[in-house]
Structure formats: C-alpha cells, structure tokens
Length: 304
Image (cartoon, rainbow, N blue to C red; front, side):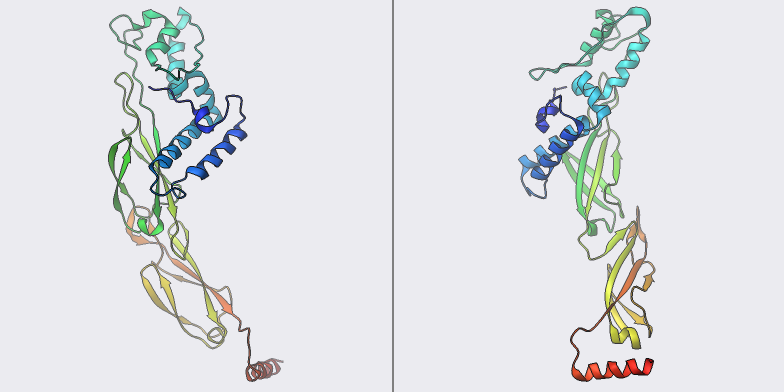
C-alpha cells in the first residue's frame, strides 16, 4: 500500500496539537470544498485527500496508530493480537517511520515481530502456527451532496470512486449527516482477506422554504389582522402544491395547525409522510389612514 503522509496533506507537523490539526483542516476544507469549486476535479480530489487525512490524524486514537504503523494503521489491532499470540518467542517493538519513496506491507510487519520464521511452514506471508492471517481491506469514506427535494422519493445514483462506477440506492427521507454502508466496496483485502466497506455520508441541502425535523416540516405564514379577527381563508404552500385553510375568527398569533401527511417522507417509506406544522404570525398594519385610525379608536372605546 502506498504511503501517504497525512501530516503533509494538511500542512502540519507531527508535533502539531489536535487543535492545530483541526484548524488546518477547516481552513483547507473551506478552500477546496466542491461548492466553492464547482466542476473542478483537482479541487474535488484535494478535498477528498484532506478529509481522508483528517479522519486519521484528526482523531487522537487513530493518530497514535498511524504514527506507529503508517498507512496500515487500521490493522494495528490485528498486529497487536498477533504479537500476543507469539508468546515467549520474543520480538522487538515495531515503530513505523514512513517511507514516502516506496511501499510497506504486512510481511515486513510480521518479520519485524516474529522474525523470518513467521513466513515459513508454507503458510505464506502472515502465516502463524500453521494458519494464514487475513486482513480486511481499508474502509473508505465518501460524501454525497443532494438537495432536499432530491430525497423526496427513493432514487438511483451513480458514484465514481477511484475510477470505478458504483450504483447506489438513495432511500427516500434520508437525513443530513446520515451514513449508509456499502459492504465490500472499500479497499482490497490483504492476503486474501475480505474487502473493506464504503461509508457514504449524505450532505442534504435545504432548497425549500420549510424547516425539516425528521419527517415533519415547519412553516410560518403571515396572517392578515382582519382575517385573524374576523376569520376567513388563506392559501398555504406544501410540497404537493397549495392547500386552502379555514381561519377561525379570533385566531391568536403563534397558534399552530397540523396538516396530516403533508410533511416529508419517512426514511425508506416514499408513501408514508410526516406532517406539516403551520404557525400563524399576525401581521399588524403599519400605515393607517385617518379613517382606519378612527375606527380602531372606536373599537378600543367599545372594549373599555
């Protein structure tokens, strides 16, 4: 596996604090984000590299493994378990120093831990006690940006990762930040081990005038003072078009009405929707004619 210097990717040193790494990541992520660089493949590639680097050295536990095992940090637990199985054979501590000009594989790891005999007995690299050690491939991360109206129904999408087209199903009602796992679409397994998984994180951008909370939608509308006092009808926009609402006389500001089934689809259920909650905001007239002012004064006197 080719060595990647994640510190170099983020422009920080191995001595940098976690806070410094996070600051560097945020600065680069804003600079190379696809929304800032539409149709720029170089920026898109750079953005992916930055995210990949931060997933590793931006998390303290992962960073410790990376500092010791380099690009093969995800297999640190397997290597440590193999060390413990070695029992009294003895081994030297392996510290990964990085090899930007070449490659490093697990055969070198095991030879460092157990000596050349670890490759003997016909077991192949990683052989131990007559058994062959298999390692799962590296899990991969990807982000898919969609508009809110894109996930009103279940749909198919094609992603291109590392030159390979992957056809996925985007479920209706998927939420911002939600992740799905595609088993076996990650990095290649080591020594015959299973391939890693691909995790796709959804970045859902709200391109509507509604506020979404899971399957429910929220909307505030202005209600004319006279309609609020006397009653009447108003038209309200929904995702399915406009609906007519009857307003009761004496409707108060900030009162709400719930429209059943006019919300957003529930996750993986195209035809099962949440509700639309409409909040009334009374619109007070600001420019009154002399006649209107007189009438309001008379109403006030009547109330007294």
